[in-house]
Image (cartoon, rainbow, N blue to C red; front, side):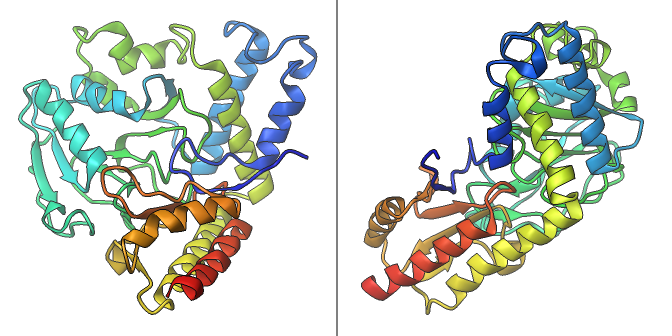
Length: 360
């Protein structure tokens, strides 16, 4: 049995063990083909079946209406920051809600294109420790863009923003962690390396009417129409990544039982971890406001900053990896995505209690 630690990395992040085991089993010979899935042609019937399955499974998990297209795009979520305004502004002003690093980067990409994006609300005034509750969106805006979960600052939209214009959501770090209604969205997307699979592929979901906005002057590979018309196969896609994403969808559906059950599991995990911090007498301090705390990325500080490096190092010695905070903010962070189970949370909480006793 391979040595496995409890993985709290923010991304690339944990992948469900049953998925890894199936990858291992099929790696040299994918379903009798005599080849690895990394070797088969993306134009072959075996890969056609993978593409059909991955789209079908996503539709089932999300109850996705027929007017939405499911795409697989390279370049990660960061590429979409540029592609979205290129494809969807159609002469109108884009609007953003700024809740931290990733939404700030999305705004910058629209600015590079000279589009003068409107930031309708921001939580920058308190170091992005909360989700803004008040904002106004002009009726003639191109779209309203938001980041559903903020990996670095540890905040999350519990209910999604509302507007009379299409919603666009960067859902990279909490997609499929809970049920949601896709219908208000014109477009949503997620880099795979947090909740869906390995890095190298980005899931993108576009509503049919949004495609009418895409100018023909947009370069071919930056045009969402290209991906729709060619079933994400205009060029060679990240075949292995898509294969793994398909297995993760299968795990969510067949092993977990769907998004309602996944949401309940995630809520228990987060409640356990935040509860341990609340009962620590201030030794551990979550950085986000209570009502906006992320169920995916638990960001926290210790009572003394000099203890944080020791905490991370000793945790790793105990098989608890990935607990160092993002380099831009410091502190500590436990990313508890779908594939990180309750047993990992229980082990972390036990270590935290022991560490506090020895260093309190």
